[in-house]
Length: 562
Image 1 (cartoon, rainbow, N blue to C red):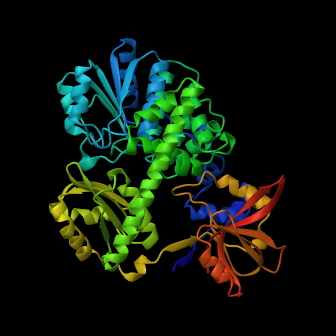
Image 2: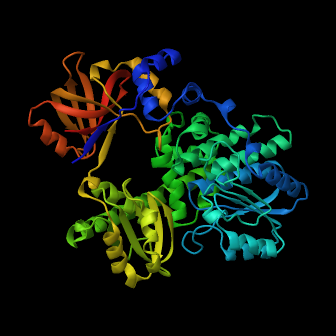
């Protein structure tokens, strides 16, 4: 059961359409994305690199770049400390590639998810000191490493922090420079950059100081764009421009590793969109940090020979395939537990899978949340007690509710939609009980909501409109692919296709224009059963163009139906 909701935001859509030479439907979608005012609309539709902000506006940016520039000149040993996810990997690579171009004596270290945990720990600082490191530059982490950075300073090292995470309790580490737009007194106009984008901005500032050509830094755009999509940042404002421009370069990338990773996944570079980063290429890079070491992904990006790149790309795809299999096994075990142990009666699901790989807990929690539309925690047995991840629904602020369980938990953190926890195994029943006792969700909150942008007859769809829809890309978080709806369609014929019988193709008509092809992917049995009723069909859809045997035709991709 779903609740369909029509967007009802107001504006003079015809005036906007005339001003920007777009269809009024496109104007409505832009308003639904809360893009308001001529300047914002112009940036949304036509923003390019000239509309991006000056990196020098970021607090400590000039200071950080000055320190690093001087250390490069001194040939001081610089170590980049990154992170094991897509953003951390890309941030590290951007800095490593950029510093190396400037002649730096530089290496890098990425924490191991299992043995080191998230962020900078004392072991990494101690190792840096033993290795004769003069300067540590963090990326995609460091803003919360107050004690660890103080330890590095006490040992005589220079520390530059570049990060994008929230400042915890207003405390800023005592580094020589801290570059993070989330600092309260940072005047940088756009706060939503990921770690890779902050690293890109640092390289832009460094290259400017070194008087390199203005476009020299653009070769790093594809990596910053990859990081932005991979870290699920809002595709609004500067992020949108960065990803749009980065995708253009990614489609022509000269990076052997990325080209071979595309090839391993049967993708053509010129076809790459944000979707492919988020759901195909990105998970391959993430798999190395989940199941092995993220250094494998760095090696892929740095590969100098095609043979080496192909081998590493194959390894990462195999790792991701293993991750998918392990995830499927975990999801099946979680569903069984929900259905057979009484968890289904809870408002907040707490699922304990002791043998599940701890790096998969968040993915499994997300799948269960999507299936049942309940806030969900998946807990696993780690080396030091129980660890887990949670995924939430919009009506349930996950981190705020965790605070009420503070006495039952070891470490915990997160935000309204996701969280991470550690606790003693003996506390799991109390944790489940407390979360549910405090929960104020009602039955209506567990009904998934489908947000429709425009109720639009399928007879309105034409090639020009589809071409204009491309102006709205890249799609992703905070800029979702538009969804249209029409009632009372006549289904003229239908057939199930695909070797797994997971595609249903049909011809539909609204009685006004020519009949049109429509296609549905996934579990086709419910839709097939619905069609047997032989009554008019209501669909939520996205229009596209199907290319087959050199011929192109309009096609509706059905997302929801009743």
